[in-house]
Amino acid sequence: MTTPIPTRFSEGQTENIDRLVAAGVGTSRSDVVRQAVDHFVDSVRRAREGEAIAESYRQMPQAPDEDAAALANAIAMTEAEPW
Image (tube, rainbow, N blue to C red):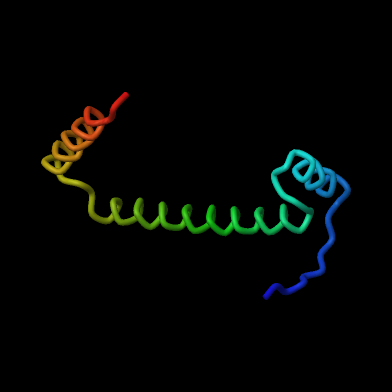
């Protein structure tokens, strides 16, 4: 089920939406707006999660031995890549 939400866009915003439709990013103005909302929600969620992770490290920083283990794991994962 979808719910109509009346809203207004400036001329510039409407032109940008129309450009995205013309470029095939969305099939309609509504589709582009729905995608934009989904992208924004994901962006906010990721930013909040990132801030929560950063805050936890500020409250309890890694110990030097954990830094060494993290570096070793990063090197091992990089070496395992087929590039």
